[in-house]
Image (cartoon, rainbow, N blue to C red; front, side, top):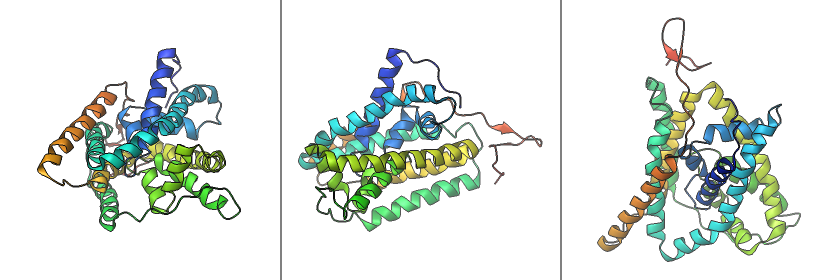
Length: 300
C-alpha cells in the first residue's frame, strides 16, 4: 500500500475526527473501534502504518498516524463519560444505537470483498468467526470486578496485560477491546482511570497499549497483504457476530420505538462516516490459468 503524500490541514483534521470516532467506539463493551476504522476507510492504511512505522517511509506514516492516534486518545477521554452516562440512564437505547452503527457498517466491510468471487472457504471462515462471537454472547458477560486504583508490584503486570489486550483487540474489527477488558475483569479499572485522571494507572495501561498496538498491527498488516480477501471475510463474520453480542433485547413496546430510533441514528451515522474517502479494495489477481485469487492464497 502506497503512503498518501497529501497531508493538508483538512486531511489532518479529518483523520483526527476518524480517530475520535474509533476511540469513542472502544469505550463501549461489545463495540469495535476497528469496525469504525473500516467504515471510515482508513483500516488498511492504519494497520500498515503502525506495523511499518520503523521503515524508511516512517515520516509519511507518522504524519498519518499522529492525528489519528491523537483523535483516538481524545475520543476515549472525551466520550468515556458520555458513554457511561448513556449506559446508566438509557442502556437499552445506547446499545441499540451501537447495534445500528455496526449494522450500518456491514456494507462497507462487504465492499472490501464484493469485487472478488465468493468461495466456500470464505463462507466457512466468516461462519467460524460469527460462531465465536455467538458462543461468547450465549455465555454472557462476566461480573464487573473492583477497579485497580494504584500501581504496585502486584498490579503492574495485570495493568500491562490489560493495555496490550485492549489495543491489540481494538485493531481487529468486530472484536471489542472494552469487552475483552470486561472479560479479564479490567474494564472498571480502565473506565475509572480515564474518568478520574489516575495518571499512574493510565501510564502503565498506555505502555501496554503501545506494545499491543504494534504487535497486532504488524500481524494484521501481514494478513491483509498476504490474505486480504480471506482476512476480510473473517472480519465480516466478526462484525456481524458482534451485533449478536451487544443485542440488549426490547423491554416494552414503548421502549421499542425509542430503540428503533436509536438504531436508525446509528445506521445514519455509519452511512455518514462511510461517505468519507475509503481505501479502494485491491483488484483480484489473475493467475496463469485465468482464475482470480489473492497473492499467496490457494483457490478453495
